[in-house]
Length: 373
Image (cartoon, rainbow, N blue to C red):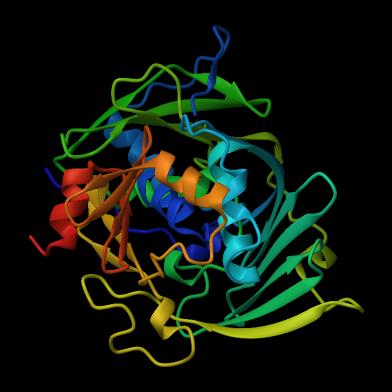
């Protein structure tokens, strides 16, 4: 039986992706358990019916707050984001490490083709604005006082066309999971519960693929609208989620239009960029034009064992401090053809030739992909 479902209209949610190799690997792998409530008793649905219910969700307006946390068992990585390298690469690394080891609070605003994600840091905030109809968006960082204006060469809300940010939404993760469904996924309905004060179904996905590090993925599906209100991913053999995200409050009323538009503020540095989609199985930059062509990732395979290949990086440590070198060596182990960093959910393979491969798969699997097997 073909259990794949068509992708929903991108106007129905706010998709935001990470910017760095580890963040990219998490978003490629991922997709929270609802709080069980004995008083919640929604109408029974079979797994197929719940999938159809979620896939048919037509939410086009939303305002809410989401909480996200990650615990992949990594040690303190702050020394890796020191002064070496460019300012942009250092910021991207810092954002990725923050995503993988910390917690975030964010505001979500959605009204038709316009959406905004407001990531609230301790003393600053980062905002992503997307206008799908106009094919453009903004990434604004109050700490660095920078505003990057993105123009898309394709669909602005496609996963490959997303501006940088270190937060996801449950809906984005559900959409990604629905594209992975097939004979390699066991689907079941869990226990009804409550999220953000709303009754929810629990959808449970278990990858039936030994090559995947993902043990199970759980979603809280709003019992009225079918929207995803929470999501989590648990590593194979683990008891607790390594990555989870959920709404703490949510309303399906349209937000104030003023919250969805951005005009560069005085004192901000403005940069313009054009986004283009990565190819699947092609050489990075092949067939692409523009200044960002060489920085596009390539996706190998599909489903739960998809691998992301990042553009080549400088693997020398000449620009790194002694502490950074020691930290990098302590986090990775040597393997044939390079070094690997392994966590509960994500493996990263740094090839000797500068290529970087990441995914929710074993080191051997990444090495085979790197070798072209």
